[in-house]
Length: 191
Image (cartoon, rainbow, N blue to C red; front, top):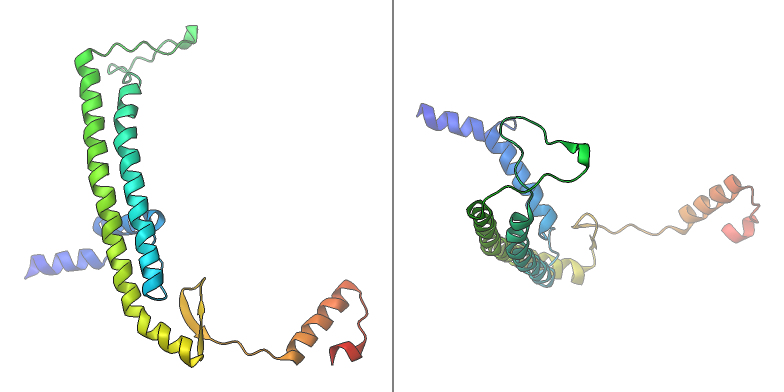
């Protein structure tokens, strides 16, 4: 029972390597794919479409870019620690053998294939989750839209109380702004 308790406490520790890795992965997925809370099934489906499209686009880009980057990568730095002579201003010569260059391209192709498979798969997984979240949120969206008791805040991605419009408060705000700017507003206009 002791190893299980140790694993559980490490998972809860925000300074643990697992927690930091999970936080980084969550940040990357959140920046690449659409993970905002959907209002309803329509917003969830829209978010899913965006995530799948991003995954496919990034997968194709990775499939093309990774082998190309590996093929055009310069020579590795000298292993003996000696710096290249920058006196002539020319870049160092590429002394890699054809087999070494082929190995680099093969590694780039492997990375490209991995990205071409994993990125669309990740987009589909995120899309599925967004559709499920949209389905889950649809009943409350229908209720609050019909009842009119709450309004959807698109920035906060949640239902909030309606802010009551009070003319007297707006008149006082306009009066204060006018006085701050040095403009005289007749009291009859703001009553």
